[in-house]
Structures are given as structure tokens and as C-alpha cells.
Length: 482
Image (spheres, rainbow, N blue to C red):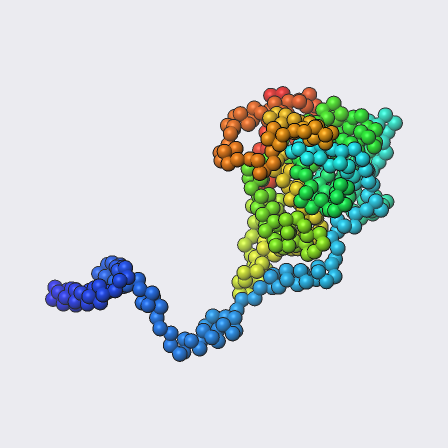
């Protein structure tokens, strides 16, 4: 600009600012000024100035958009995923189908029933219990060829087809004559864990003391509780003094190590596949999110949903979160990339990308396959898994206290190893870790040393994010210290 032009511009700007300030000074609302290069803009924070008076035309447009569910002529998005959930709720109420786990009976699995109580790590007990199991092969004369397979979180005992249940099992190709688990040589046993819903006692079972379903009165469980119940089957029913091997993957890998820790002299070999000796924070965090997704479903009703609508939406979301942890980033990329299911359509808020449609399908498929309460209890048991010496010693004391209480002894609740929540004060709740990383490792080393002399095979998958390979290396590394 030339000098005269600049002078005229500055004069006009000054007059404009003076006029705005004079007007705004009469207002009781804050004065807000913004300076942008050569412009100074001032305005009042008055609600009137932020809310322009609507014209008849804008009023009519707003009314029309409200009636049509859109906004000023824009089409309303469709939500088929929500409509599907609503339709499912209606269908489940009107006609079912019944959950798959409700069909498990003595007609398709074997049942071991114990009338003796089992005392649990966190101070609870079951007055009696049953274990669903299946077996393949023959037990030899000296009962030395038995292999116990431990399952993952949501698996039934149906590892392989049987005469009672000819449907293919989840390890169908690994079990049989001449296969990896050779039934010409070994007697294979697989159970549904306690707390599950495929024939073993769990939250959906009837409490013999009340005649009602346990629901969330079911006591808290540990992975070690699961293997102690399995031991009852092995020892009391099959009369087996020593297993040839204890093996499993995922939570089953945890159980195989726990069995060796609990019954060191009663197992020859231990095989842990994609398991760990102690849960780590990432896994706990992911399972926490799954449980929260389920528990915030209004139909969960604090566990009392058995006579009404299942919390299928929460189960679906929980399974979708879980499925994310079952695959690695590179696998997602090679399988789905960032491609959409229908690139020709307008993007949607419902499942749109291939990865979204896969997760949606995985959640849909699972919501009637597993009892929601069983999922909560068993996933929590996985979080609590810790073969460290401190945890194991505390659990032993807690079980002993539970047995004493069962036998009539009066123990002050304040002296229990695991106190009722209402007796715990804010001062007792930790907000940071109590033990250093080095102390925690030393504690775990002490706990694992109990079966140091055993043959232990540890298998890991490099791309696993739920049970990362460093956890299997940790067990292996501790082996060198044994």
C-alpha cells in the first residue's frame, strides 16, 4: 500500500474499533477481542449475540429436518447394526434359541460328581461339585499313560469327537491313532473347568444350599482351584497316581504349570503352549475392558439374567475386544488391510471396514455359545494367575481358613487373608506397585522352583499379543536358574 492509502485505512480502522468499543461498553458481558494480522475483531459474549434471531425460513427448515430425521436436507444415516441387536433381543425373548451350553448333559459328556467340598484360594468353597470330561484311548494296566489336556477360557471338554458326541472337537486333528496325541499309546482326558458352563459346576449351576442358581453368589476362583478340582477326578475317579503329562494352551498353558506347582510329584511332563506363569498388565487391561462391556449391558442385571433376556450385546462387544487380542497387527494387515466391505457406498458408522465386519461376525457368533457369568469369573481367574511364592503361600492360608470356617470354627473376618470388601479401608488400597520389578521376578522364580526338576516344554508364538513370547521366554529363562 502507498503511504496515503495506509493512513486512510488506519483512520477507518480506528473509527471502527472506537464504535465497537462504545457499543460493547454498555454491555455487562465480557469483552473478547481477537487480533489477526491487520484486523482487530471484538465481540460481546452476550447470549443474544451468539444466538441470532431465526427467520421464518430457518424455522420451517428445522421443523422439516426434525420430521425427516435429518438436518437441513441431509439424509439420515441408517444403523442396521443397531436394528439387528434390537431384532435379536425381540427374537430371544419370543423364540430363543436356547444357549448352546444349556444342552450339555450326561448324554453327550461324562460327569464326575464329588460330594466332598472343595476349598478355594480366595476364601470361598463349593459344598459339592461336578466335572464334565471326555476321554480317548485306553488307560494301561499300571495307569501310567494318562495325559490331561487343559482348556482355554471358553472351550468345552470336547477336544475330539466321541461316540456320545460325534461332532468334531477343537483339537480333532491332534488326537487319535498315530496322531500327535496318539491314542494307541496314551489315554487322553479333557475336562471343562470349574466355573465353566459346559457341564462342570459354575455360576449357572444350582447351589445345593439354596436350590437357586449361583449367579454372582458363586465364589471367586483361581486357576489353581481349577486344577485341584481336576486332580479330584484324576485321583479319585481314575485312580491315577501320576500323569504322564499335563498340557494345554492359553489358559490351558497356565493350568499345566499350576498342576505341576500343586501336584509336583504326580505329573511327569509339563507342556505349556502360549501360556505364562503370571498375568501381565496388558492382558489384565484387555480382559478388564471385556468384562466392563458385558457388565454395563443393562440385561446383565448383576448376574441375575437367567430367567430373562441374556446380555447378548455385552457378550458381543466383549468377544470383539477379545478377538482383537487373538491376532497380531501384521496378520490384520495381510488379511484385511484398510479396505471397506463396499467401497462404492457412503461410509457408515455401523461395521464398514472389512476388519469391522469380521469383528462384528465374531461377536455375533459367540453370544449364545458361552455363559456370561462364566466368562466373567474365568477371565478374572486368568487375571489373578500368579505362581509366585507370595501369592501361593497366601492362597494356602486362605484355603485353610475356609476349611476351618466350614468345620465350624469362628474366625474374625478382619483376620482373613482375603477380607470382605466392606471391611477394607481406603488406606489398604494400593495406588502404585508395592514390589519392584526385580522383587517380583525373584518371587516368581521362587514359586516356579518347586517343579524345577521336571521336564517342561514351553511353546510360544512370536506374534501373540495376549500371551507375548517374552512370557514364555521368562519361564524358559527361569529354568536356567533352577
